[in-house]
Image (cartoon, rainbow, N blue to C red; front, side, top):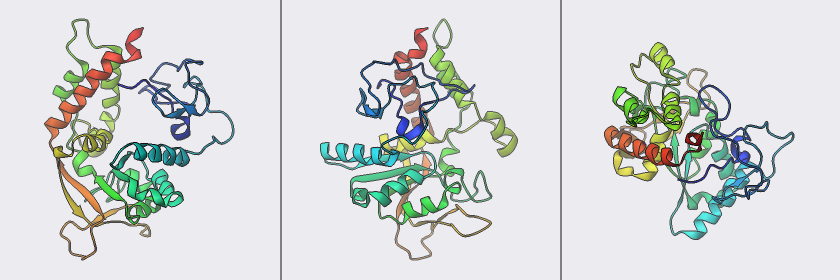
Length: 285
């Protein structure tokens, strides 16, 4: 487990918020060896401000995509393999990165959680992460980069059922630690919405599926397919049009995950939660 670092260039000074609002992690102590926009203990660029403090007025320098390019270039220089860029939101920053630093395309592999092969979640055929910036997603898909898509059809199988929820809380005699309780609450944050809107008995877990692919792609069944993003339709802007049967004759441009070993995925997640629980500052109070 790495020490917590607030990377303001990417997500602002608030850091990770908890299910009830406000920062989940305790403040980063001022003077802990982390200077403003300097290299932190893990090598990430970060600030030394309290992560619960509001962001300073004015734009941050350097911009997020510049920080991304710097870190990718440094990592690529240290290893003889591509750097994984895991995107779990809109692909805006990734599109900017590839536009401003096109030479980076051969140094990275992009793995994104998003898109749908059929039914969407925020539109009849559109998934939120792609729908909110379809132009950026289309740019990424046309970039020539090595890309893997982890769509809703996969993430909707990672359900937080009773057995998973119990395992997340742990079996400590004194009850769940504050960290495990926070993880449990975060995993159930959208449970009511998923039941009422999507008729899911248990809520799914989306973003870690993309991370799991990077850690162990043997958990996934995948195919190399053609994926294009609709950008013009008033009905389906943001749809990831996936040529599952290779009917268009267009060259494949992405590895598309089709299924996941759910039991193995949860073992991976629960192992990570246990490792984090052993070091979490939430348990110090």
